[in-house]
Length: 160
Ligand SMILES: [Zn+2]
Image (cartoon, rainbow, N blue to C red):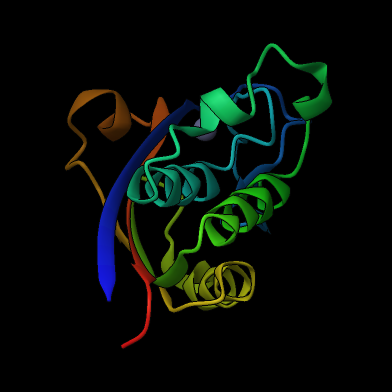
């Protein structure tokens, strides 16, 4: 059996537009500023999608879904993640697991973690773990200007 690991990173700036909703891991988090982006700016979905593409050596999210293409304007990132999982499968890989770390001062991820993991596992078809850390109020993340997510994904191909 062949295994491949991949890594993804994403960052989005928080918006001052009260109409912009915060979506992380496909879950809408009420009562918090949203993130600025061409799609729904779901940094968790973007980081996992990039980790999957990275592991399969299929480039990156921006290459498959360019932000200059109006087709992807305002699209749910869970849809992009589904597309990426389809690409990974079409190349003969299955997902072993994914792990994502959210870097942000707020929101607190703990109340949302179970719902996010459940939704992402249903899309990816493998275990997904979500962890979170703050930046100790240092730098742009620590000052609450933006939120970032890092992810790793493990793929496998062939018989055990
Ligand atoms: Zn993104």
